[in-house]
Picture 1 (cartoon, protein in one colour):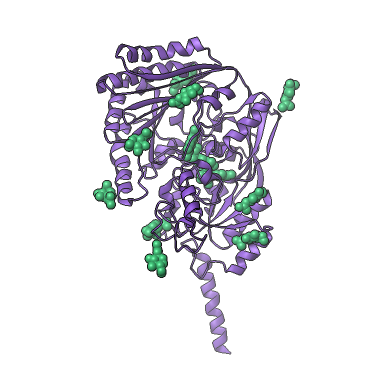
Picture 2 (cartoon, protein in one colour):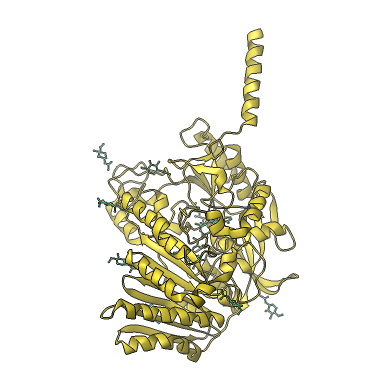
Length: 563
Ligand SMILES: Cc1cc2nc3c(=O)[nH]c(=O)nc-3n(C[C@H](O)[C@H](O)[C@H](O)COP(=O)(O)OP(=O)(O)OC[C@H]3O[C@@H](n4cnc5c(N)ncnc54)[C@H](O)[C@@H]3O)c2cc1C
Ligand SMILES: *[C@@H]1O[C@H](CO)[C@@H](O)[C@H](O)[C@H]1NC(C)=O
Ligand SMILES: *[C@@H]1O[C@H](CO)[C@@H](O)[C@H](O)[C@H]1NC(C)=O
Ligand SMILES: *[C@@H]1O[C@H](CO)[C@@H](O)[C@H](O)[C@H]1NC(C)=O
Ligand SMILES: *[C@@H]1O[C@H](CO)[C@@H](O)[C@H](O)[C@H]1NC(C)=O
Ligand SMILES: *[C@@H]1O[C@H](CO)[C@@H](O)[C@H](O)[C@H]1NC(C)=O
Ligand SMILES: *[C@@H]1O[C@H](CO)[C@@H](O)[C@H](O)[C@H]1NC(C)=O
Ligand SMILES: *[C@@H]1O[C@H](CO)[C@@H](O)[C@H](O)[C@H]1NC(C)=O
Ligand SMILES: *[C@@H]1O[C@H](CO)[C@@H](O)[C@H](O)[C@H]1NC(C)=O
Ligand SMILES: *[C@@H]1O[C@H](CO)[C@@H](O)[C@H](O)[C@H]1NC(C)=O
């Protein structure tokens, strides 16, 4: 009897101890704490059957996989489609940034094991606020890592996670267009569900004669990491970033509140969600953003190479183009260009509301250099009746970016006062075999609201994104290239732009001093908001605000950094 009392006391003490000292790590598959199959079934039942177990499509390429049976034809077909964004964005688990799939169940590597160790284990195919609530509660109750997954575009792998449960938002496709009235905006607006993608929003707006600020990639989730992280596209010099358009966020918080966040309600959350990064402060159910009447638009594309000319001439043409694009952005235009393999491509340069004569005038200096040096080039300039027509005709359908990224926002002062030094840095970077993508823009040309978009964006003339090659067959090679990005290539731009920063959505996953580089002086305020509305750090993303609370172990498991 006394023994039993002692035992009881002991277990009470143990309970008390475990209550005061929370488990330092997230529960991982294989651990005793991981829910039993019965528990998962019960959860699925609560969800009305919306729980999806991860079955990697590429298991058809792996002879011994425990998932789908081996099928050579299906594997061949999958490999053909691997670079198409839909191949990933339609699934509940596949990250587009290949590094974060960790070479597991890779269609390129049929002779390696097919595992889902680095992927989410399950996803909830959400269709309602109730689904969000039940999912967040289940993850909390079982101490499981929660990932919000929309399309899987994230370059820093923030929509995947080892041993995680995904809140999968892809099927929240409702779109509504209406006249909105508030103190800050009276006019047309679009309300999009969390799963709506850029092209779907553009199509819906177009049917009623409107345009919406969206990305250059048609399949990015407009209300997901895109607008929550900033969101650039061909209309940003006209209207500001996608985050600047948001009138309301409809959200479920980590503590289960179903709220509207606007400049008048829960305004702190509205501030943070508009540019402070996806998957961090709350789970978004829908976003309501400004619409604008569509207008005529002129676009041009151009391709030339260094064949037959010196590097000096090749780069002189590029320098001239970049300088003239400053004037383009002053007029409300955006230019998207790329230097790779001795080829310069513009796809496209867009001047919304502009005329062919205006744009031709801005391209002429560059064309003169090409003509003077007898450099062959391909050039098209077209005046369209609408921005929509320009976008659908002139913007190539984007594929998965098979490069390892790094990025830097280049302040206007550098382009205005120090362009030759910038060109020298870009020349050095291509010398290392990296590709350079640049977007010339001005996201503070018009009045934009005060939100969490990093101040680096407001001063930026060019968003530069660098890519080093990714090799599906050689992990060592990939790590060497990641180091090259972090230690050599980005510092070449950083020294030129000490006041600059980087766009958190197009950045180096290993970026040092990331709090400052991605968020600048917004960091402390964002971190305070994060801690207020997600005190238990249910939402986590690599280099997201507050993520330093966690440490990712070698196997991907999250453990408290202060354990
Ligand atoms: C091919 C390609 C082209 C791109 N083009 C552009 C471009 O033109 N302009 C631009 O600005 N960016 C562009 N990007 C970057 C893009 O903005 C980011 O990858 C962005 O994170 C994508 O958001 P998503 O919701 O579609 O993706 P996901 O990878 O599914 O999610 C990204 C992040 O947002 C979070 N998130 C998603 N949905 C929600 C939600 N409902 N509530 C809370 N958090 C959520 C996720 O947890 C994750 O942290 C491009 C990326 C790729 C791969
Ligand atoms: C959840 O239930 C549905 C419907 O019964 C079923 O199709 C699905 O396979 C279940 N999910 C899991 C993970 O068992
Ligand atoms: C598949 O299993 C067979 C039989 O166990 C084994 O010989 C073979 O090496 C395995 N292949 C792979 C790719 O694991
Ligand atoms: C997810 O739910 C949608 C309906 O909201 C359905 O059309 C789709 O087939 C489901 N997908 C999976 C993989 O369960
Ligand atoms: C908004 O109001 C304007 C002016 O009254 C009207 O012309 C337009 O059709 C309305 N738009 C929508 C989407 O209801
Ligand atoms: C550059 O050339 C390499 C090797 O030919 C090729 O794999 C790569 O796709 C090219 N990159 C671009 C952006 O064209
Ligand atoms: C340039 O635009 C024209 C007209 O839309 C198109 O036919 C061509 O394919 C484009 N070129 C490139 C390289 O994108
Ligand atoms: C953007 O345009 C505004 C208004 O013309 C100007 O004041 C500002 O300097 C420009 N900023 C950049 C980064 O080009
Ligand atoms: C993999 O890449 C590394 C670093 O670039 C290189 O040294 C090595 O030879 C490569 N391995 C193979 C098998 O190609
Ligand atoms: C990635 O793969 C390596 C090698 O197979 C493995 O040791 C590691 O645990 C994996 N990491 C994750 C996050 O799955």
